[in-house]
Length: 171
Image (cartoon, rainbow, N blue to C red; front, side, top):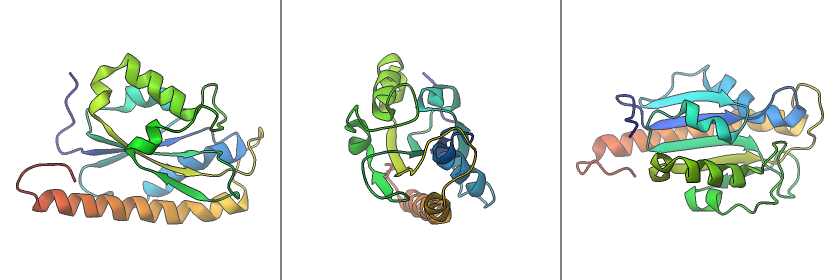
């Protein structure tokens, strides 16, 4: 079994391809996130898709992901999915990847039983385009900093709650 890197409790992974227009949202969030001092226990990485998660994971009990996710809302809408909702995303939820996001995650968990104890979160933003050109559309570019701030606030609250916990339970 893989053990967590000492003190690391949250792995934030930005998914996507910056050369495919709005599909680069997750990678852009990671670039912006790295400009800040990350809360204790947090690490941030970018990957082309969720199947690369296995190579980035070092035993952290929480994996938070950021990706472009098409569910039919206006472009730039930020969707927040908790653990159960991430795993229940329908297979038809659109993505620029060969397998839809949730289906890729289910395959990954099936092939890697040690990942089944991980608690997932997803910040998914509704793309407006996924063509073969770099850059984000204005609606998505405007969502980057609010998502970065929300991730940092959520991690800081979690770190504070864990520090105050005597049971060692993950909030």
